[in-house]
Amino acid sequence: MTSTLMRPSDATADATAAHTGVATARRLARHDARTVLPGMVPFGMLLGVTVVATGADRLVELVGGAAIYGGSAQLTAVTLLDRGLALTAVVLTAAVVNARLLLYSAALGERFRAQPRVFRWLAPHFIIDQTYLMAVGRPTLAGAEFRSYWRWLGGAVLVVWTTSIGLGMALAPVMPSLPHLPLIGTALFIGLLVPRLTERPAIVAALVGGTVAALTSTVLPAAGIIAGAVAGVVAAMAVSRNG
Image 1: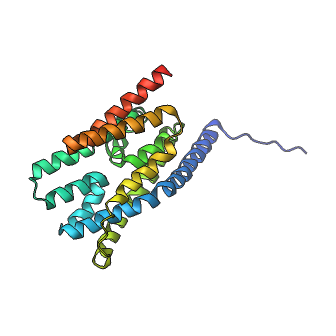
Image 2: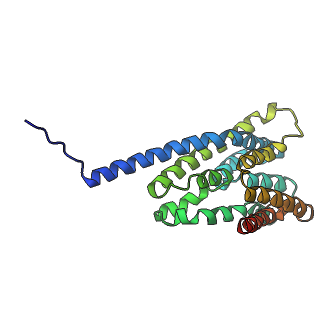
Image 3: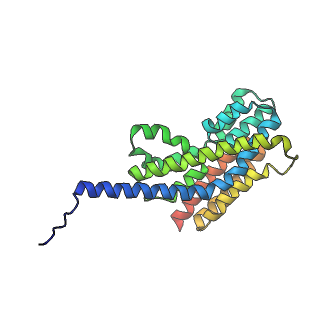
C-alpha cells in the first residue's frame, strides 16, 4: 500500500510565505530597535531634565513626547518658551527644525503609497531620524512586511522615547548641574551619522551639510538645520552624478 503526499494548495503556500515574511520583518524591527534605542535614552533624559529645569508642565511635555515625536523640535520649543519667545515664533522655529522630516517622507513615499489608507495616514507619524535610517537600510521590505516592520520599530521607539523623558523628569531633582548635558544630543546624532559614512557621497553630504548648517546658524539659527540638510543632499547628488 502506497501513501500519497498531498501538496498544499497555492493559497495555503502563499499564506505560509506571507506569515513567514511578516515574522521575519518583526525580527528585523526588533534588531534595528536595539541598535538605535540605547542612543535615544540619554537624549530623552536630557529633554526630561530640561523640562524640570525650565519649570514647564511635566504632564504636557510627557504627552508632547509622544505627540510631537521629535526630540530636537520639542527641546527647541521648551527652551525658547522658557526664554520668553512668543508662541507663534516657537511653533514656527520648531517646524523649521523638523523640516528635514519632509525630505525623509519624500524618500519613503513610494513605500507608503502602496499601503492601505489608514496606514498611509497614521504611520508617517513615526518618521524621525532613527526610524528613517533603519527603514532605508531594509529596502526589500514591502507590503505587509513593511507595515509590520514599521509598526514594531516605531512602537518600540515611541515607548522608549517617552519612558526616557519621564526618567529624566524623575531624576532631574537629584542630578548635579552639568554644563555638558546639551552635548548629549549632539553626540547622539554623531553616533548615528558616523556608521553611515562608508561612501564618497555620504561623506561629502556630511561635510557640506555640517559646514553650511554651522555657517547659517551664526546668522539665522532657526534655518541652520534645513539649510545644511538641503546643501548636503545637493552636494551628494552632484558627487553621485559626476562619479
